[in-house]
Image (cartoon, rainbow over all chains, first blue to last red; front, side, top):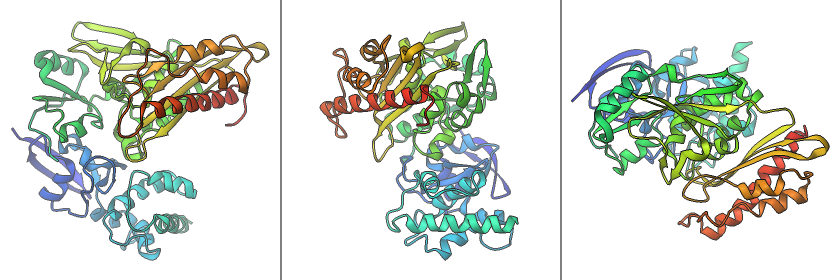
Length: 162
Length: 293
C-alpha cells in the first residue's frame, strides 16, 4: 500500500506515492534521479549518503522516505544555490582548491557534513572539523586535505560576511 | 538492503499511537529516530508487520525543569541533549554521554528515550541513567507508570516495557553542589558503540568525604548495571586517587558475565571496565572539586 509524501528537495516541492519501506536515499536517487547522494556501506557508518534534513546532516540510508514527509531536504545537487554567489558553495570550492578528494565517492556526504558544521560553528578548530566529519569515511585522501578544504571554506565564508 | 514490507502508521498524538499499539499488539514496532530499528529491519533481523512512527509527536520532544527534576521527552534527540543549556548546567552527565554517541548524523536522528527502550547492551545512555538513578515514564491506554533505571534493563535488547507501552519521558535529578560527573568510553572503532562505557556521579561532603557516588556500566555484560561494589568501596571515605583506583577493581561483580565476541574477549572487557571506571571516577572527582577536567 502506497503512502503519498511531499517534501521540498533542493527548493523544489516533490510529491510521490511511495512504499513505506522505501529508504530516503533510494527515493532521492531512483525516484528523483538525484544520484549525487551516494550509497556506501548501507549500515549507517560511512556517511556517503549524508544529506541535510531541515538543515541537519542525516544519513539517508537510515531514514525512510515517509519519515521525511513534509521536510526540507538539501542534496549535493542543491548546495551551490545555498552558497548565494551563483557559483559553487564555499565548501565545494574548498574541496576543489585544496584537493579535498581523489575518487570522490565520499565527497557529497563529506561536504554536507561540513556545511552543517559551518552553519553552527563558523570558525571551527581543526579538532572540531575532524569530529564533525567523524561520521564520514574516506578511503583515499587521508583526511588532511578534507580538513584543509573545510578551513578554506570557513575563511571564505567569514570574508564574505565582512 | 531494503526492509521487508510493512504497514505504516504515523500518529500525530500519543493517544493515537497508544490506540494503534494496543490494536496491533506484538505485530507492531515503534519507530522513533529509527537508528536502532531501521538497521535491524534492513538486515531483516526484524520484520514487523506494522510500524508505528511516533517521530511526528512533537509533544514528546522537550527538556524542562519540573517538580525539582529535569523532564526530558522521549523523542528528544541526542543533539538536543548535548546542546541543552539546562542539562549542561544542572545535570551535565547526560550531555557528556550524548557527546560520545555515534557521530553528528546519528546524534541528529537518534532519540534519548528510544535508545534506552532498545536496551542495546553497548548503548551509552544506560550507564548514565543508572548513575543518575533516573526515572522512566511509560504510558499505555490504561495509564502511566514510573520505573527506576535500575529496574528498566531486563536483559540483552529487553527493557521492562510491557506490551502496549510507549516510553514517554526520562526524568533526571538536578545535581547538588560539589557534584562531579563523567562518562568515559572505549569506542568500538568502526561502529562507535561502547566496548566498555562507565558513567560516574560523585558528590563530595565536608572534608572531602565521598558523600554520594553512583557508577553505571554499559558494554560489559548483556545489560547495563550499577557497579554497587565500587560505590560501597567509596562511600563515606576521604576521596583520593588511591581510593578510586582500589574501588575501580570491583567494576565487574561476580553476578555479571562479561560478553565475549569478535571485538573483545571477556577478559579484555573486564580489564577495560576497571580502567574506564577509574577514569570516570577521577574525572568526576576533579569536577566535584571544581577543577576543570
